[in-house]
Amino acid sequence: MIDQKKYSPNFSRGKRSNKDIKFIVIHYTGMQSRIASLNRLLNSRYKVSCHFFIDRKGKVTKMVEENKVAWHAGKSRWKHFENLNKNSIGIELVNKGHQFAYQNFTNKQISKLVKLCIYLKKKYKIKISNILGHSDIAPLRKKDPGENFPWKKLANKKLGIWYKSLNFNIKEKNKKKLKEKFFNNLFKIGYRYFQKKRRNKNDSLIIKAFQRRYLPEEVTGSINQKTYIISHFLAKNTNI
Ligand SMILES: [Zn+2]
Image 1 (tube, rainbow, N blue to C red):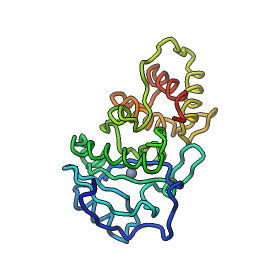
Image 2 (image 1 turned 135 degrees about the vertical axis):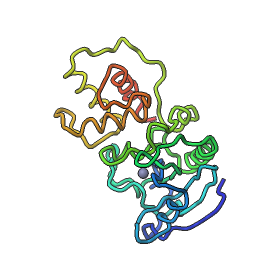
Image 3 (image 1 turned 60 degrees about the vertical axis):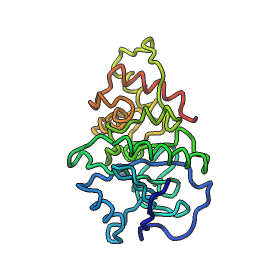
């Protein structure tokens, strides 16, 4: 599963135990090339790293040992967890990202990622609901892995939560109530960086983060019925 090892100098000293590892966080590199991304992750000046790096041919590079804390998540929150580096495994996928020329992920990349996640999930007893994207845990700062990432495909392998059929009987016509219920659902799912009752100019970024993952063909930043209904379904399946 691991094709090569290139160790990054960027990680926290001291070991963590297996039970500290509760999350997998998926990223894209967001740089012009594979080599530029690798060099950055290997350079002590940048203070960034990940545990695994998967290039577009599906080659997996191990960069930090799993029992060490890598520096990929930054300032982040999910449920009652803060700054998720210490509790997570970080996986970077090579993709130029939104800033340059956002690409589809390759089949080889995704099939290696799936294998790796199945292995890690079993080894560390990671919950299905704790397989996340960077934008889930830092929605005001990050877009990765973005709307091209095949979350539904991963969910079919029990890697990440998803919804089944949408029940259109739970429509909410009152706009104010719809917003309030939507953000309540997001809070239950684990999203943070918003207030449950008071709306804020940053809320559209939260809505977009949610849509990038669960409604990737409609990343609008506003809550339509579909977005709301998905949140409603997921809020009931938040601890699997
Ligand atoms: Zn990231």
